[in-house]
Image 1 (spheres, one colour):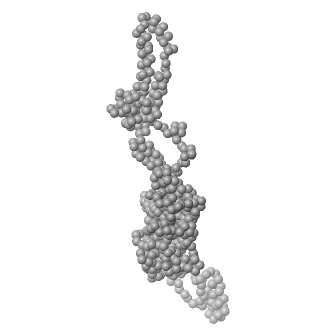
Image 2: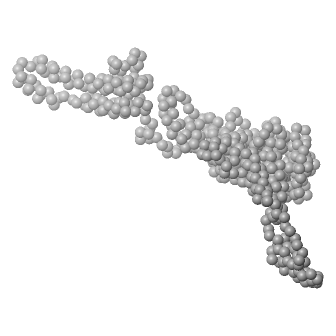
Length: 526
């Protein structure tokens, strides 16, 4: 268990009981009620403007309820907003260690292990409610087991249970009676994903969606009245002159029972003329066009484009551009959420578990690029031998690999040992063709063709001493012989005494150099 005192970012002490229990739950008689109000019922432009002004003045509760109602009643807004949320919520999350320091690697591995529990994955969609409302409030319930701190639960709380500070209209407070309670450090995750700069209550997409939904509701209502008036046939029953009231009643009942609405009775001989407008079809199209126009504006506001939702792309190129705009917005959402999680979840967690640190692991939410690994491997293979220093922890983070334990079996080359060029070339003598100042084949990386020439020269130099030894023995025999018979007899006697071990070793190394030289010549970039 940690021995340091728990303090917030301002050095104020924090109660452990606050961190491990729920503090922002609903109340039976207080202001945090599970069910909200329904300000969207009978909404008028005047009423909507009053709701917006109240939110700007620090009373955003009706605005948050209205934003929730719009998602429930407008299928198009719910669809595009859900698409934007799920693009981010389904993106892989990885952890980058602060450095190669063993302590920093340990911190990152702890977070990686926790990610496998799915606690964060289940909470991401609710955190992205900030896209519509400007901010999202998520309470962390910590668990202390065997002396270790762990985020056991992340609970989404309705925005109407919180209020802005009355002075700056920005700092979030927990609603508790008429006043608000400051949010304890390390207890809440409050992402801000803004559509525009300014106060949080004015930065969400619901500000735009509210006006579009209201105007679309008017158009829907007018269209329904129009269809009811001109889209259904009228049943007309005729009764003879002098018919009794009972007969009229039975006739109307019979006509009305045929179908719903648009039924009437008249006296036989009475003439009623139905005047039909010649522009009925055009009027119906106008309602649809207005609703489609509003939906397109909502699509632009939420996704930045219309091609993926309204099927109005002007060809493959335009569709590709629209999709790129959507991806740019998704990237911005991922970065904003990842920065918030790093600051409001990871940093407090590391402080609780290990105490204050100079550097902290970082959460990254990004789509994996299938071409990154081969490109990175090729770049490292070329640049590291030239002296580029690369953090092993960063490479592992990019590949999504954890730091192996000391007793784990690891992948390696050369029968479990990394391939070392010094083992092959470290004992070679420097041939005459080597540049001035070079003392070994591996001390520089010359151009490929020069490398081939140097390998060939080195192989020849290796074979020369063994060849000189053999040739020297034969030369001495020939020089001391008097007749050819003396040479023949001397060679027969000398042969068993000659050793070919040195020459065989030289030839073996020469074959290795020939193989390497051939490969270098075939692939100059290797």
